[in-house]
Image (cartoon, rainbow, N blue to C red):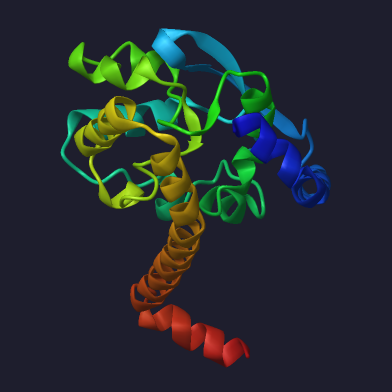
Length: 222
């Protein structure tokens, strides 16, 4: 089903992938694709493909600290993007919010390393921190989308994400996959709108905290 769906969608997706690749090359120097080792089915490691949305040689230690905090706390899985991440290239936030940066993972699907539906493939250092019961989520192939992605995603905690992934691994069927796929597009639209709303709120917040003297100076210069 995975391979058939990818091949059927190729006439539509291929032009989009080409356009996005050109966009990445125009706005930032460096490779179009970002390759990163991820952990998949039964703990096996593979090279995961994505569109590069960060500047070359960006510091990853910041993300490690952010992820450690999310894994050890009971807070929602909010990306660093929403708080402002200077490592992200122009248009990178939009690509990440819409999930378009993950389109090259169709290569991983064709190679049998991923499925269209399944848990999010995690990083090796993240896998090393998993408790034994949490590793049950690796009893199925990782996916481009999944039960967690359409059940709140950024509003869920790390533990809730793990439980949703395990629930999928235990109960997956073709019908469940189709249900998740149908819910994916509305979930992406909601996520993009939510991301836009947060950016607008941040802009208003920055205006509210701007000293009155600076505003008056700006008015005089105008």
